[in-house]
Image (cartoon, rainbow, N blue to C red; front, side):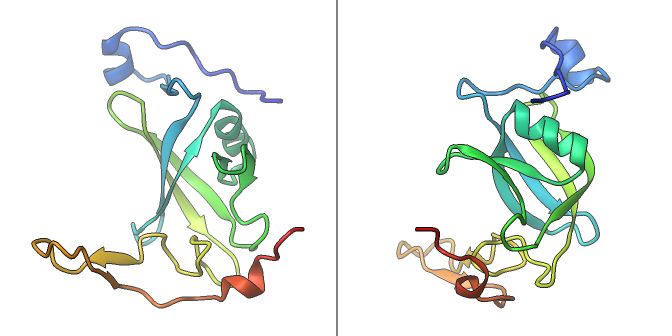
Length: 152
């Protein structure tokens, strides 16, 4: 169980300009979290945290998220070995989004389960094209089929 107790949210002034972390978890108990490479500044991924995963992240310094699809905590890299070592935790002005700066580790040095450094490996090729075509902007660093084993 969590050893961190997050303070109750107080006044707008204290939340926006104060010096105490008062995270605003949504009605579902989750807060959005962006993971950014501490060295390059590249956005690696987006995920959600709940109070328990945020507490575990702070305690272990390993990025731990809440998986909505699996309905459980997951430590980034627990299967792939591509662990995120947390170097810094930031929050936005009203404390309803987290930004964690991480050192991405592992043999592939990749954050994405599809084998890319970043989960943001595609971009809209033409902002005015109604076809909404995506263009790849990165090379795959590993084959997910060899890293993630299907559990039966």
